[in-house]
Length: 223
Length: 262
Image 1 (cartoon, one colour):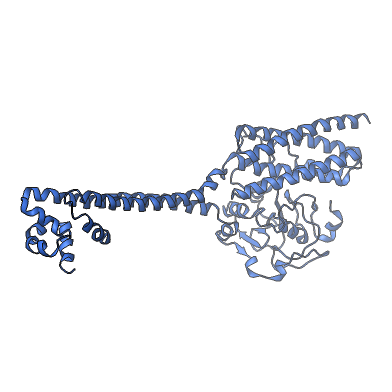
Image 2 (cartoon, chains in turn red, brown):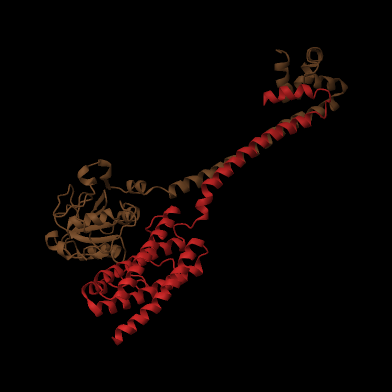
């Protein structure tokens, strides 16, 4: 401050009463300029650091809940499909099970990558389905809607032939209905482009597969 | 320079001094310097002389006012921003740091033990450096880890492969109280990348494994169980997006389990 006093004072010496105000303004301006610059830099830094974090869904968001739960839900569809793919002798079932396994395993990759991108753990602290409204009672023995029980999975591993095809298609139909229910719920709750894009494809794709499964089951029952 | 220097400092701070003491010397030596100003005004009258001087005082307070305001604003901003950055950094703490924060966890990755680090796929029985194992060579078949709750001990050679795929393996002492087992089961069933089994010769009631990590505990109510699962499930994988399904679902040592893969 002493420097600015020294340099500004002599110049203003001619006008005694008025010169003090410009000097003051100049100091005033310099301080504010510095303060505003520092403040602006800090705000910019904060926006840069926090912006992306605030713009993405948080740990307790419906999106995070959906991605975590749908990953687990999908994983069982992959499991059932791989069993059918390995053990069925029906070309239609072998093809459908490959389609479901590959699609849903790929989608798990999308969902896990988004969680990772959002700096969220794939494992939440909330119970399964907690992100969904009125979800109480929908989880039984840790199983989300549509999921097969350990006993049903054990049975699926055991059966062969037509019994395998029927059991697989029946379980997968139920599984898809549960998955569609979850996907429809997130479509109502979320406006995240990535998540709604995937959820829409799941509703569409799994509805289409249910139609296919129904026709295959009808065919199996008459054969 | 020696005269205006000390002259000027008091002149901006105190008016009385300059008007009193500065009259004769200021008029001569500091013609253009600020010291001259008050003296020039001084003779005109004390009432008038003070008025023009007062703005100097005002300008002084104007200087400190904005500085104080700006300082406070910047301090608050720094505080808010600092907290935000701290929170976001803490929120994005790496899974390794989260794991390191769990009391009693053992990080075998840090030991760089080749026997534990080995990811080799080998047929037949393997020996492991720890019980339960946390890594090392294993069978090509993995244990199904889709929230499977195995009532009997399973083959280490399969379980280690599941750890490699990112699963958390919950093991407990054979004969552990049923209510304790039920509490563990609640954390496992229906949840992919989790599996659970009793194990022989466990030195604690419960032991949790992820690849390269282990946490041994006495009680199923211990909150560190959830912390371990939250930090390491899937995160500890060595093969991202490797599956837990299509694994072996039978129990017992590999001699019995080997032919029964899916």
